[in-house]
Amino acid sequence: AEVSMETIVALCKRRGFIFQSSEIYGGFNGFFDYGPLGVELKKNIRDCWWNDMVRRRDDVVGLESSIIMHPKVWEASGHVAGFSDPLVDCKTSKQRFRADQLFFSPVVIDGKTVGYVSALESERTTEELQAAAESFKRKKALQGTLAPVTPKDFTEAREDEHALIPSPATGEPGSLTAPRAFNMMFQTNVGAMTDGSSVAYLRPETAQGMFVDFKNVVDTGRVKLPFGIAQIGKSFRNEITPRNFIFRSREFEQMEMEYFIHEDADWKKSHDEWIEWCRSWLLSIGLPESHLSLYTHPKEKLSFYSRGTVDIMFKYPFGVQELWGIAARGNYDLTQHANASGKPQEIFDEATKKKFVPHVIEPAVGTDRIFLATLCAGYAEEDVTDEKGNTEKRVVLRLSPRIAPVKVAVLPLLKNKEALTQRAQALYKKLQRRYAVFYDESGAIGKRYRRQDEIGTPWCVTIDFDTIEKPGDTFTLRERDSMTQKRITESDLFALLEEQVY
Ligand code: ATP
Image (cartoon, rainbow, N blue to C red; front, side, top):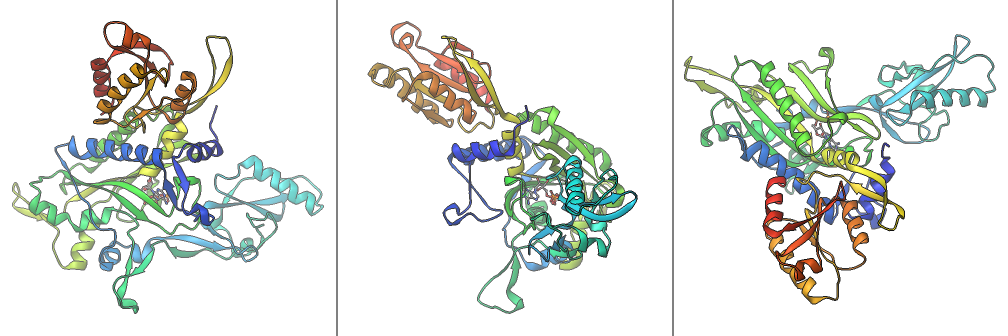
């Protein structure tokens, strides 16, 4: 069965994965805090990406640029002029919406348009729009046959249609302004001046750091084309309608890489290779293939400099949505910065003795979106039957061992048997030097297993009487997904972890 967002949000709060930001003050829309387990899961996702993308590749180097950069960076990149979403105000409810997330449908009775119903994208289905149209008809006491409902893009609505659409907030007919551009960059002031000269921006993407430091890396990094510069860090966007939990927030983390290639190189081939790399990386951290798909941006929707963009989509509970964008950006960014700064951003080609500006392939993904995807795909509720024949529900998070917040739970069978707890403590301390592990000695063993299932711990190790009484110093290894148990030695346990946690 498909998991609901309510279930995921409740689990995150209950087990300390994610809290609302500033919750004691009523929360702050579009901001989140990662709790004790969340911070581990997120760090693991980030570390896996960094290890695979940077450390285990010979052609990618890392970077950590500042969050606040010279304001000219954002003029040259085009963000000051163009990093905006179309905004509409509802004059009745005073709410604001992103026009391109707003759909409407004419209510047509016997061939005549008598009104409109509207919906936020992915919050209402066509059937629900149809039901809203029915209700509209009843409220207005209109007679006749309703035409089938087909949602229309609000950004393309006519001026008079804006005024007729019922407010999505109240369901009552409201009045929406025509869309206008709303720049999503957060502004701040740097230094003590309060006039325009001190205005700066929180970065809306990490990518510009790689372009602005391109020359520094080339001159110091012993890199040769093709090569990439990767960065992980916070980005900020003043999203008009942050929603779907951490999917669209105002402060989020990005993992981006700029892969520079020769101007004559086959960009399509490189683009395809990166799409495949990203897809198989997602599989390597446990996302199921069945939830992934590719979306190729249609040519007419691409920015003028873009060669092509393909998004890896993920099937979230609220719909199939963008997880990872892989864009072929030509040499637009470096050229923009060369022109704006007056500093050439070229590379010397030994073969042709010519200078040129490299082209770039950019895979850009949000850590938080991967985080959410792993929880949605991993969550399951199962009926399990114990030895006594009692059936109960268990919640299990099937997270890959690579990213699970706790790798092993160490459980002495009984709390008040010193021989058991001492052996358990010794193992726990040893494991702790390399892995995130958890020690739990309270409650029935079955209960302790369930607690670990719910937070995605792949293995539980129980120190029982066989451990201390029989030769071999073996433990019970209990596996999360199959719930099977077997005996294992300490060195085999370490070998298992070495193989599965990388
Ligand atoms: P969307 O169309 O969903 O707003 P985008 O196309 O603007 O996303 P990019 O600018 O390509 O996104 O950013 C790269 C990646 O950063 C996205 O694929 C996504 O994973 C992540 N991302 C972008 N905006 C947000 C946000 N507001 N909250 C969380 N992650 C985000």
